[in-house]
Length: 462
Image 1 (cartoon, rainbow, N blue to C red):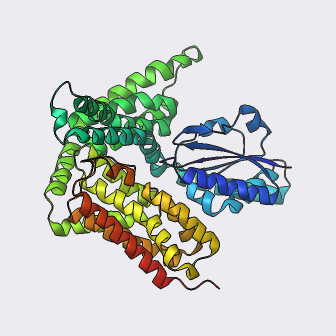
Image 2 (cartoon, rainbow, N blue to C red):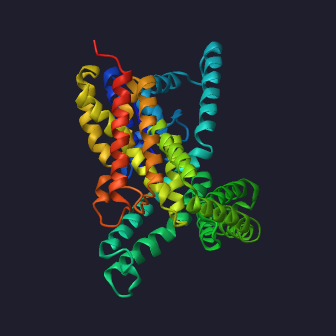
Image 3 (cartoon, one colour):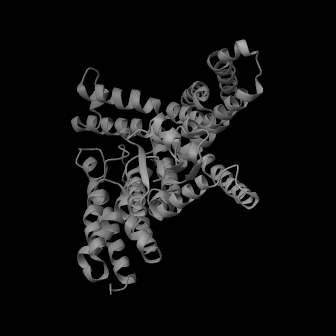
């Protein structure tokens, strides 16, 4: 029996990571293939792959949108894909892994040609999956726990009153110091540092963290942190190959030469070249968002809402979420409220549709609707994936419509949210959400619109 290994990881580490793992394991069992899956989620690394298992494996499947320490698989055939492909196309990934292993360097001429084609395809896929998106999502996934923890702790300080934290020595002031003064202060440096880490490994971490801290101090915000992260990563990566030292001094390069030079270069560029213009861009964006009229608010809400539902946790969804989270550091909280509300309505709307129009869903889909309801109230948009995968042409437009309306209503109502996750459970914290009744109504309206749209488009189940 051929043995395969797999690693799954998504930026938030909540749903896609485990859905891809389950999909791969189920398909492998059906095909009689022995498979172990390492899950790198919000709880850390689960079922970690050992060196002995790597040595014994025929091939590795990486279904991930973040860095998963691929260097440990050196010398093994590796199939790379996004985490969504692990959910939607597990059989294709497993078959590709098996076929890659079947081709050896000593194959005959025809086999060698085929091996070359497979290797070229592998390299093309690797190039697509190791570019901007992967590096950015590695930064976002490592930043996210700080944002969530900081946001919810800030929200808890509001229990004592919206301005209670201003009184020194109180518990509210302590909570604000933990959430705002510490956790939120680390957001941009960690984002920048782990973008650089994804590009250049450990040598990128120091210049990335320093560049991110300077971005915060200079007022360049999350945009400056993204720029400094990529700058630090590529400079450190270049130095790894460009700086040549005698063999006796090679050990000094990663702990002295590269960190000092790359940090110095990134720091000077941030202070003298990048910081001021990026700060101007962030100031203009912040001013526009805080002073925008109702028309602009509707348009922004529609756009963010539709993006949240488009791929349900994929790159477009994460782009909208990252945009809203980044603005928290600039004390702009409206987009965050719109994004969370719009991310809740797809699974909630589909759950409602399964209750009302049972004849348009299979028993499996009706059961999935119950799970979707829990994921929906928890702000896990991925709960809509099983429905969208089964009937994308009808489901995706429906959930995009509901989420777009929800996002627009949230912006028009002027709702703000400082806790970037938690779903309905955050709404129970006093003062965590402004205009709570209107905000709840926006979620309810979007849920109903999603359900009605799905019921109108879907056909009865035979």
